[in-house]
Amino acid sequence: MIELFGWSDALRASFAPQLEQGRMPARVTAHHRGLWRVVTTDGERNARLSGRFALDAAQGEHPVVGDWLACIGQDGSDDLIVHALLPRASVFTRRAVSGGGVQFIAANIDVVFLVAALNGDLNLRRLERYLVAARESGAAPVIVLTKSDLAEDAGALVAEVEAISGGAPVVALSARTGAGLDGLSPWLQPGQTAALLGSSGAGKSTLLNALAGTALMDTGAIRASDDRGRHTTTHRELFRLPGGALLIDTPGMREFGVLAEDAALEASFADVAELMTQCRFGDCAHVTEPGCAVLAALADGSLSDERWQAFLKLQKELDFEARRDDPKAQAEHRAHWKQIHKSQRAKNKFRARSEDS
Image (cartoon, rainbow, N blue to C red; front, top):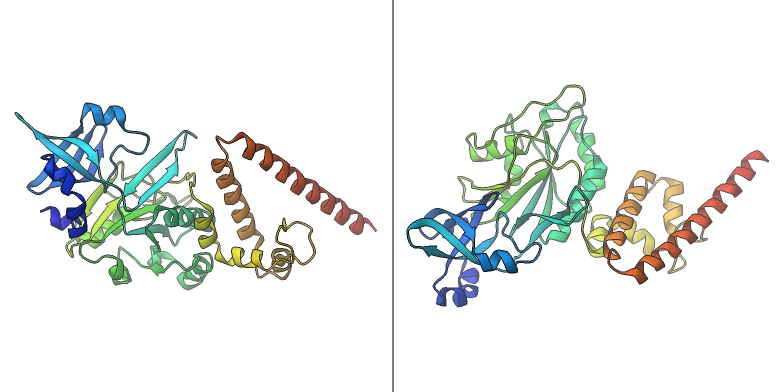
């Protein structure tokens, strides 16, 4: 049975040392407090962490949906005991909403479906954040635009999303009518694992039900006042679709703290990154410098101020995360932004004088 959930020859080879210790492989399909639901060679079981594993595991080493585990059965109980977590091929994370540590969402995913609805709640800035996190995870991002049947001009909205996609595929569909569902087929092949990520009301659970051909998850109504939905998915769970693909549904995430390296940011803002390489000076701050390609693009409209500000905001967030525990980096950052703010104030003062004259 485990072969139906992504178990491969490569995983089997890497698991050999665990097998010699009498352990069996298992994949996490759901997590409820201190209990993990797993699938093994002989079916579905519950699993609990061993005392040593729970004590020694660092942050992020507790199992999440999609993880592969090494477990041992126990006499007199159907529950398995988790003794080890296998290395992850990919993992999707975010900064916890409370501002605390890292929250691990799902692991060992091949594709991240970033779901957004083609209604009044379509938010390009939120999609940009999801794209950066998806690229950092190691999985391939695919933007899925749901509720195409409700949009007055779906084509125009799709074009807006494609403009900020950074080259990620964009698929518009209607889970209600079935139109466009086949557009996801390239990423839903047997044995592939995909995860649905997006805000409440984006249509993730409805999409899951449409792909599964049955009602696996409850769906909720959208508030007419703001086109937003309520949480209908309350936990993360991995499902096997009729065609053999594996799909992880997750609760809606409206607030999203991004954790990523510069490479993921630059890949998601490839247009901005390319402009920055064209500036006359290598240390251009893109504020008042002559020969700045970014300022030129902002002036002629080829780069929108909204996209530039979104890039700066994310860059600042990522810089903050990188220097969180580095006092020297904190001091350098303060000096850098002090100079930028000083230049910006001078620019605004000059502009005001020019307008008065």
